[in-house]
Length: 360
Image (cartoon, rainbow, N blue to C red):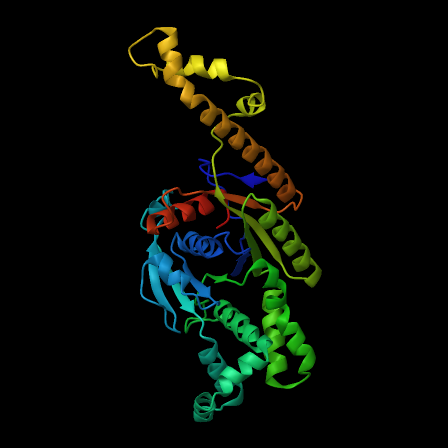
């Protein structure tokens, strides 16, 4: 059942025990925005989350209004329940958390990988100078995906000196839905090709995390035909690959202006009723002469009726798309369309919605 924007009651989290949240979605659905909002929601109440970007677009930096992120983990935001418009669970509004971010650089990640498993050290730097890194990631695109998924899984498993996990949750702003299953499953292919050695062991370790109950793959969609169909297909592919599916994140939901009765009535001829209503609302000016009032409201009738018809059609189409998503029988969350665009304040508002609806 879908959780809708603005519900007052706060739900318990649906994803207890999940440490790696992979967020994907069709291009244009706002997956980076939703991933960032989810990271904020997960950080509230004293937690630390890591938000990872893998596509090199610096979308996280743009959202948070900061300089381009280097290849290092750094704190980009703090968040309290009060900032999300929510009371703290323990009654304290000071239970703040932190969001850290990492924009993975494929070249640096490969050098790190070579040093970690093959102890190349300075030799790795030499390979970088002669262009081997670019060659390796271009001639074998799967290598790039192995590095990206491996880095995310390492962050999700990493522990500090005290033995506790460094991050309570890791959120990955992942590639689009059409590529997500192959992207996450690439380590299975690598493990099959490399039967022994550190590459095999690393690939197996990554797949153990990606296919465990500590991972959930969420898909972002809109209430439109193409994004919804891609979401349905995407979840089917994830199921088939044995990857853990998460929830459906419906973004940019517009509130219905007309109620169900008004939508049902829009098909009839309502010119006279609308004209009368506009006149009673004072659109005819001070004059109460019927002919004067009618002359004033007449130019408004066709545009208003056309807008009502278009709105009714949209409401019906969105209702059908919701029904398609309900067939998935997965937790579904709805985020409102922010008419003024998504600035930092809007991002915190979306995080509050996710927290309220139980996504975090």
